[in-house]
Amino acid sequence: EAQVTQNPRYLITVTGKKLTVTCSQNMNHEYMSWYRQDPGLGLRQIYYSMNVEVTDKGDVPEGYKVSRKEKRNFPLILESPSPNQTSLYFCASYPGTSWDEQFFGPGTRLTVL
Amino acid sequence: GEDVEQSLFLSVREGDSSVINCTYTDSSSTYLYWYKQEPGAGLQLLTYIFSNMDMKQDQRLTVLLNKKDKHLSLRIADTQTGDSAIYFCAESSGTALIFGKGTTLSVSS
Image 1 (spheres, each protein chain N blue to C red):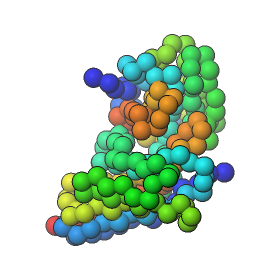
Image 2 (cartoon, each protein chain N blue to C red):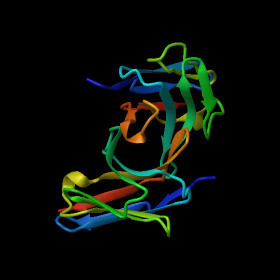
Image 3 (cartoon, rainbow over the protein chains, first blue to last red):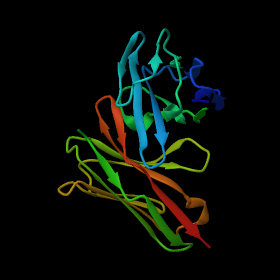
């Protein structure tokens, strides 16, 4: 089954404690991205990657890092989380041809205390 | 930059039609999309329309596109309680989909 998986699905942490949210896709998609969703703000792109070792900033990259060492995985790293990063995070992948083939992960709800 | 605007809330009664409106700014978008997000779930692509079309119908869903006014709408006929969700319109912009803030549709029985 074609899918994007994220882990963990829920996380509560404290300010400053480094964390990683993993994202994996099994569709051999070249393009992956991370979004955050906040009430009244919709989805905003954090980072994206057009292929292995190719990453670039989206609209709200501050406080986040990503890496793309292999095609299937695109982890989101918060080196020093802060309360304003409390949000719902979605990973997505798409083959780079048409956006209707974009798959979203189930989401990770992060709370930073 | 690109921007997508939607009203935030819509409340309808079961059996009525729902119309969710959206305006966008990037006239070069090839496709425009509607996503549905049910409570606690991820985003599900509902439908999309190619920019050279005026209308697309898919069962209870009708998408209307007014390219001149950069206005997109989603009509849900015979709205059911299971249609209660957040609906996002989105336009494609190179390396990302640009999403609106989402319209929360509440359906009462």
